[in-house]
Image 1 (cartoon, rainbow, N blue to C red):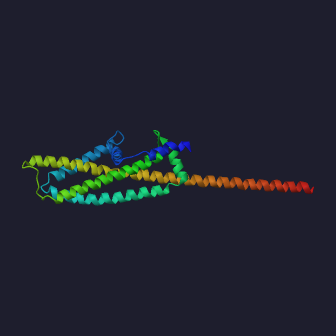
Image 2: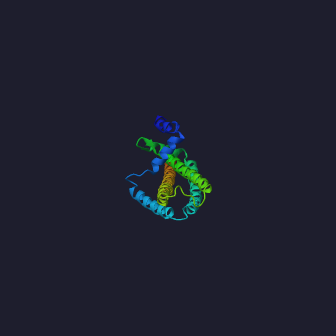
Image 3: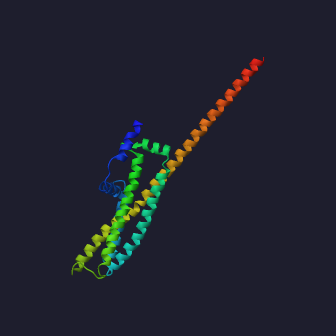
Length: 228
């Protein structure tokens, strides 16, 4: 029982929403491992930011984009939440035990897996909230709204704000790749452990069968000796 105490402590330790959000952003921060994808996301974000930012119809175009992205985010959020629920349902006793015993940097694989899905859900939740705020703001202003009379300043500010928006949205959508990978890994591991259980069960049954056969042979041999 003691070997599970560390895993138990990982789950019973108080985790505030702020800390969960911080962990969520750690999942998408640039690192050496994802530098290539980060560069691509930055380039794509700049491309869309310039296209929308320099347009004479920036507000209406951005409104259409936000509405489309809102539908996508809600759909993905629902899919990930469903996948998370299914995975929790798959955690039978033996699989739960196996995941809790696997350690990486003193943290169980079970904790890392659940924390990852929680982080991704928070990332999409934040994305949905940001989109809601933007939609409300855009609905409250005119299509030709500008911050100042300086057109260059307006365009520059628009590009910067659009870049921040696009880089976050594209990054969390790209994170779906890792979510799919982690989900497949967990399902594959679950199948493997079930097959191991089947193999062990068959091995035990085979051992019992052989033991019974050996016992029958001994009894038959004993009966033969007695008859002689």
